Length: 88
Image (cartoon, rainbow, N blue to C red; front, top):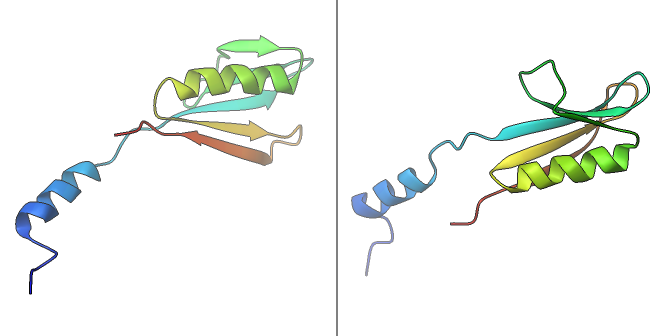
């Protein structure tokens, strides 16, 4: 009977499972617009007149790398999370 798990296979899997830094882009409402803000920053990357426009923009930049779009309601509650991963 052949062993499924070996040290070599374990090291290989461990290297694939290393923590990948995920860029998070928050879509939040402002005074009269919707803003895309990179997590950890105060200043918006860009502002839009509608939530849909802001979400579309955030998806484009998150899709270019491993990223997540976090969409907030007017109240600040999280409405949706959209995650993009890089295929291996």
